[in-house]
Every structure is written in C-alpha cells, then in structure tokens.
Image (spheres, helix red, strand yellow):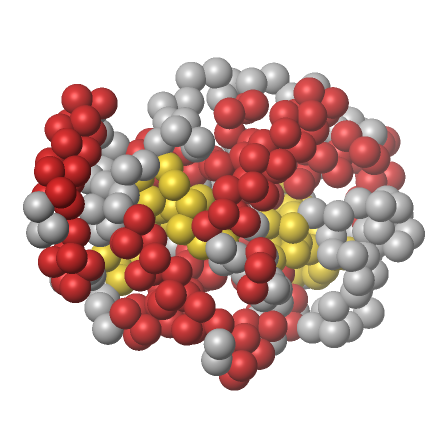
Length: 330
Ligand code: MLT
C-alpha cells in the first residue's frame, strides 16, 4: 500500500468517524467475507500446521471462513512482502514468525518490508520447540555422534532448512556456532519438503518443530537425537534435551503470530483477538494442541501488545546472534 493511499484512507476514516458513521457499520459487518491468512512456507510444514489448526478455531468463533494460502520462498520474506502491500481491511493477514518478523532485518540487506512499520501484531500463536532429527537409517544415534562427525569433516554434513532466516536455519546456525562445527545448509521452501528429503536420505540432519516431527518419529521414519526445549517432552520418550548434556543452556523454540498490514482498523484486531481468546478458553482444544507437541502460552503473552514487545526483544536477540555467529547478510 502506498503512503498516499494510506493518507487518503486515514482522512476518509476520520471523516466517517466524525459523522458517526462508517466505523460502527464496519464493526457490525467485519468479517463479512472469507479472510485469507498467508503462510509464507510450503504446505505440510510446522507453520502451515499450526496456522491451519488455529485458523480452524478462529474461523468457528468468527462464523466466517479463513482461507490459508501458502507462498514459500526466501525464508518466508516473499510472503511477508506481499501482505505488507495488501489492503489494510482485515481480509489479508500474515502468519509471521521468529524469522520473518525478528531475524530477517539482520539477515537480508534489502528486505522488501519492515516488520515494525508495515505490520501491526494481532495475537501470538502457541510456540513449538524443536527436535534435532536424522533419518531412520542414519548412523548417528546421539547429538554427540553428529557433532563429532561434523568436526572430523567440516562442511561435509548437510543440514536441511526452510530457507535463509527460517526458524530451522536460525536454530541450526545458532547450534553450529555454539558447538563450533560447520554444516552445509540446504535451503528448501519450507521444512515440509526438507523433511521429505531427510526421510529419503538426501540430507543428513535438520532441526524441525516438534508438531510435525512427532508423527514421523513415532512412525519410525525419523530419529530424534535431542530436543531444544528446557525440559524433556513426554511425547518424545527417552529423547534428551540438548541443554541437559551436550549443549548446556541451549534453548530454541519457534514462535509465530498473526499480523495485519499497518493501518488495519483497531476494531478488526479486536474482533480477531476475541475470537482467538474464545478458542483458547476451550480446555479440550488446549489439551489437543499439547498432545501435538505445541506449547500453549499463558493468556498475558498472547495479546497484540505482548506480541509487539516480544517481537522487538527478539529482533535485538537475533541481531546479536547473527553477528556472533558471523552469518553474512544476503
Ligand atoms: C521454519 O523453519 O521457519 C518453519 O518450520 C518453516 C515451515 O513452516 O516450513
């Protein structure tokens, strides 16, 4: 959206509000048609899975369809740039995450959107911890095996990612820098296709979110060597955390949030937030998320304000990590 359009829209809204019309009518009617949530990664990955799950519940609470659209590429930044230019009317929303909304400004020299200026936060989704994964036929049984192999032959082991700046890439770079090993990163348009190659033996390892790796590890198609969570997870029996032994203090979790183009009317954000709060009030729903390896956050962490504050702290964190890991911005 151009700045002149935005100004004209603001003036129109102000004029309508002054006459006492427009805002009230819009409040009554939103959402009057299907809403699109753009997921900036391939279908079948963790962002897609969490988004479809939350969208289904929010849609039921709103009584309106939510269409989840996938547009992968460039670590999710192609999708972000598209929604940054969409109409700010509440019908085009974006699923942002740790990469697109926090790390991307430090990783890309010419990002085509500004997470702080072009978007407003709506609410924060549940988080997903990650698992260090290898294929079922891999020779590596522990994280230490994998690190030792990488130390012996720097750059030989291949690590799948969902693209530069994706959560799977950020966590893997962070881990490699802490453990002081080198991998060759192989970017995909999402961890869905990366995981397919991991199962097929085309790549050696990856760090992926627990919500999509759980069925694959339970089904014996992948082996989880370690978890990036603070504590072990009952869903991954016998799998240690990296923090408890191999990499003390190492934690990595993927966070996501719903974002709207800047200038989206406040009442639209309000309607969406209320629908999400209604979904989270259902205890059975929350338990069903936890059974999938998805971590539901306390109510005070999910609001638009909380997401905005958290996102800014994450931007500072990733600026530091990118610098310390010596990752060259693209
Ligand atoms: C990521 O690594 O950033 C996400 O897992 C990407 C995806 O959802 O495929």
